Amino acid sequence: MRILLSVALLFASSAVAAQDLGTACHASSSYDLTVRSRGILFDRPQPAPRQVGLDDGSVVVDGRTVALRPDAQDQAALFERQLRALLPRLRAVADAGVDTAARAVREEVARSAPAALQDGEFDQKLSGHVAELHARVARSNSTHDWQGDAFESYANGMVADLGPLVAASLTSDAVDLAMNGDLAGAAALRDRASSLSTGLQARVQARVNRELRPRVQALCPDIRRLAELSEGLTDDHGRPLNLLQIAP
Image 1 (cartoon, rainbow, N blue to C red):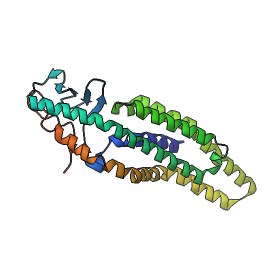
Image 2: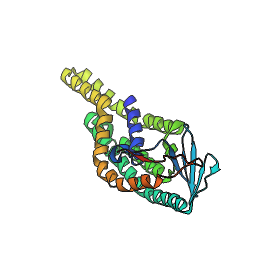
Image 3: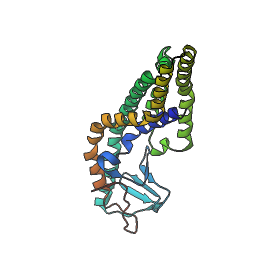
Image 4: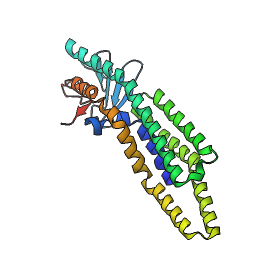
């Protein structure tokens, strides 16, 4: 079911909403970020520089170590420390996003396909996927973890797991209504199915945004501070790295 694919994608996007602070804090970056046991790495396909590594005051740009003044070394080291300190708070917001999305999805299914919840199998499987997403958030140290084939495979697996339960519920209801000649009930079922397939993602996303916004906004001062610290960091030709930017 296409709607369950949307749900799977929504769950994952909720999990990383804390890493995408553009709307709430007017922050942007053209880089992906990976936090390592030693150092952090910003990378992007284009344009140059494609890789920027920071490690305790050193800056390496596309494989070349940048000669820094002592004050610039202190600035780079402070940027790294403050970014690392922000990660637990980002993960907490991401976990809250997963839980909020799960509650909203279950309420939508309860309203549109209530029979899917009767034997508890949907709730059991939904809880399993929520737990797995929490685990993914806990072990994730890179924005790359939420992209590409691995993520698509996870999303498709969630669809394959949950989709048939909702489809079976709607099919069973449709058969019962047809056998009883309940035209009004059939029309109501079509309306419920249509609502589930066309409006679910927007409604759940709106709820996630509404409930998470205060927590995300609380991070904005630290995000702005990181952007200020990143200003002045340059490559070995004096060109700004533009790791993190705040729109006016």
